Amino acid sequence: MKPLLLLAVLAGGCAKKEEAAPPAASTDDIIMPAAEMTRARDACADYIKKVCACTKPEAVEECKLAKLIPDAIDVAREVSVNPESERDTVLRSNHLIRQNVKSCIQKSAALTGC
Image 1: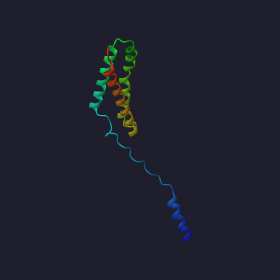
Image 2: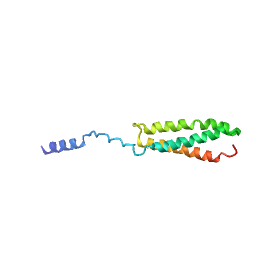
Image 3: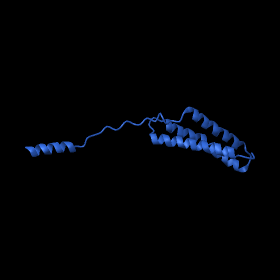
Image 4: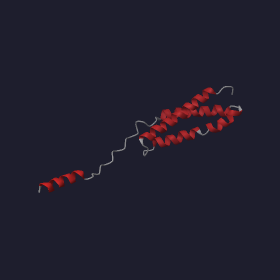
């Protein structure tokens, strides 16, 4: 009788238990603030205005590329505010936005002779 009882206890202890999935971590604390997004859009709009007004031959191609930056920022923003986006995805999207803005600011500052 003891071996059967021991076997029943062991079998019960080894049974695979379904665990509830942990709740998704909130991303509200890492979503880029609206004020930062406004500054980002303004910085890139300023760069686009400057580079597209430039008459240098190399600026013509750069103007075409610069006009795509707002779309890249908007797509990254949409991903970062999507409630289904995981925390890591939101962080990467924010990083992408900041990289684009950094590029806009640096390229705008480097424009000379236009």
